[in-house]
Length: 270
Image 1 (cartoon, rainbow, N blue to C red):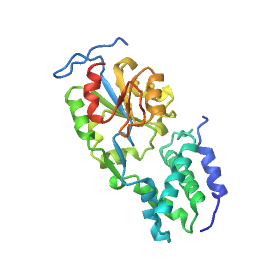
Image 2 (image 1 turned 120 degrees about the vertical axis):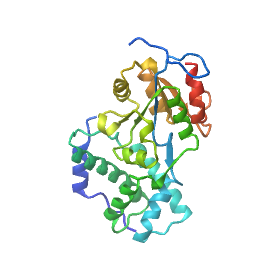
Image 3 (image 1 turned 90 degrees about the horizontal axis):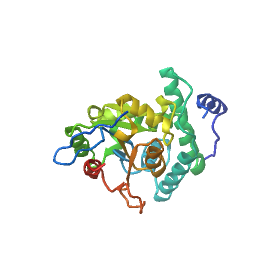
Image 4 (image 1 turned 60 degrees about the vertical axis):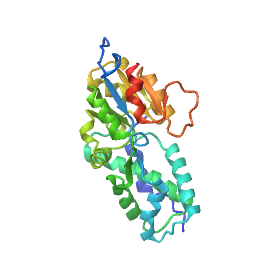
């Protein structure tokens, strides 16, 4: 396998896409005390749904037609490389408003990440065609799965009269993913970074989401699995944050829940 660097024209195109970077009222809850919360926001990937298996397993399954043989060692290397490349990537913010240009910028943002992954572990012939396949594959539900407590929690909150929204650093493929997973009709709003020119943990994206519901920060809760992006981001925007910690890695946080099924009970007492 060779170690090809990104094509100059790809890097040039990608650089052009980068974006330089009320009075609370009570909401009645069934069979419980009165809550001031009107809106419950959720992060998307890692909170409502997750990648089936792992990112590396998906990447390598699509790489097999290009001559890449999946091994436990390569799977681990790809997982590690993805975490590093994703962590090092700039926020997905783009200074464009045209829908076609936006999708191109989103695609180039992900091309840079996936190319960096295989630049670290070993490049292969036909990478551009490979990327097209794997990028489109993540636009549908085939590589995503709902957490077991997602649907029941969302339906319970809707039955109690809460408005629901998503605040995510996902790209516009999120809309087709939500539709494929049967979640579209459960949410009143979806606020994503690439359409907002703001990304978590910046307060701006939370404020944009609040404006869609015409509520104050004190009337909303945000639930997510990232300590920085979700909990600290929500707090910086003056929302109540609930940190979803399914694996128990964030000990000592007073607003931590182990599953989405704890959300209705938690917000009842806010």
